[in-house]
Figure (spheres, rainbow, N blue to C red):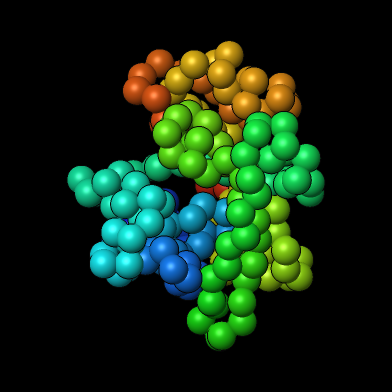
Length: 192
């Protein structure tokens, strides 16, 4: 987590803050705030605990060769409708913030996204809007930075079906299935 945070800071001027530990998963994170969204630096922090669950094992295998983009997520205000549409359950999640407060949310489609890397999973926040990870007051060296797009490799028709044709800044590119790039923009120009 710390090494990736240092790399994003030195290479792109992106500043992150400690997110916390994902209870029961053996994982933890750091957050790069981008306003209404964020980049999540996530890693295994307890190998034994991570080995006890599918997400922990999946993440450990994905980052074994080093830092990389492993997935993406779409926020929704109606996680139950999305979960029903894609025929999955909405799963409650939480993590403890460094100050002891609990951040909670529900996810839908994570297992599918783990099996089909071009697909996003879905999130619905169940906490005060002021605790949203992207809205933290961390200042990037070049000033405000925002997400402008995502590039994924994979089957475009399957992605369209999964996101129900929502108009999103997502481009399907050639290459191995999965997230290929996060595209950001700041006062100093684009960041890939």
